[in-house]
Image (cartoon, rainbow, N blue to C red; front, side, top):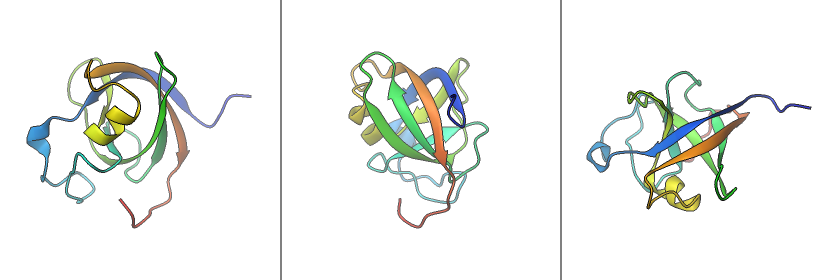
Length: 107
């Protein structure tokens, strides 16, 4: 059985220049939070991101819009990217799995 919603595509790491700026959700962006930007998933959606190469996973919350770079599906915070071992490459093929979209207070 296929899970709720899965997608595959390229993930990149958020630019450090965006640190401290407001995201589309109104939260301030921080490289330490487990957050991500996606063009169409509802803000607040929780997503399980799996690095296709090493199968490491990280749970992130969509709190911004983007990436605006052609060919990329999701931008991950530095904390999320390092958890799935993609900091050296800066870009990775990932699988996204929507696991919920409860609006939660914690970041």
